[in-house]
Length: 405
Image (cartoon, rainbow, N blue to C red; front, side, top):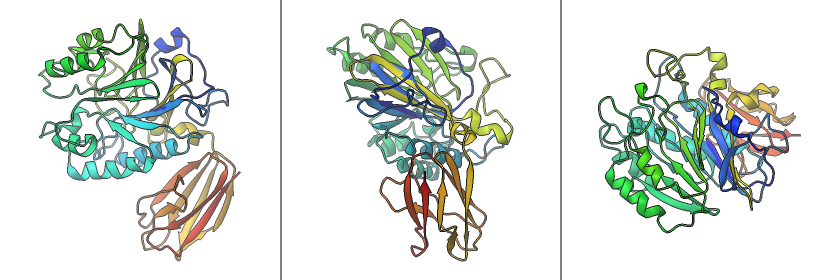
């Protein structure tokens, strides 16, 4: 996930650290826009107070490669890890302005997969901007994806402005050629040239696309064959940040005024470039899976020209937290009132024969589960101090409270 915020506090990155590749870790990113340049900062959990985005700036979160519908051994429940990413975003001390999803929302472009993904993602409670991955455009050239997530079958690429930055959402997964890379195509390139024409060179530009716009590894198709043409239209801008997914691992590169960043998946990792006979889902021990999934948060400080990016794995918060459990039995929550320190992972376990669903009583509550059948579990890391009241949406007389200190 990636978040765009204009915090007043965030850590600066050196050029050396930006060029460093961090393979496999995390499922999201927090981005900070400082004077036009995106830089990463810590999301939650391990972030120091000086590193966390604060109010007063532009912050947004990036998530990618959810692959809802995937059911193989590397992660047979990608809907649960996507839900963890959404919960992690909701737990941020300062809510992001919006969320961007950089593609492969689903595994096979099936209606039920789109339904499940949409239901989970909308729980973030913030606007979400999407670009498709190749798994989202199977069979219909993306018509179902564009209709559901972009508002119309013919609204493929688009742009919008927010917080002084210009965002461009591109599509490089249509009309792919055998053995080739991603492709934008002449029509889209012409649109891009027109879209940025006349804008001030000082305008921060953020580009969203699924496949990388730099050649990470051509043997595996990890790149875009006409990316150079697209980037030529952006070279006059003082700050350009390109956010991609597709490769399921964090890799970063800086070329002049352009910063490239790929995000982790919320579903499963892929091998490092050339580190296996080919790309594809990579199995890791189940206890370490969440350490290779993550989100990204991006933040821009006012009057600053650096957009900072923070990558965090799904295990970051839980690795430093304690754990506490609420049992559901005989149509009651036990304990009815649970007091925990901030950073605790609270788990609800359904011991009843009937299904139950946890829903926060307050509009901005981080508590919202799917229906829990017998023995099902729902976990949320409670990072923000406060009193969180909740109930069972299937049996509203059932109520409980979590007090976070």
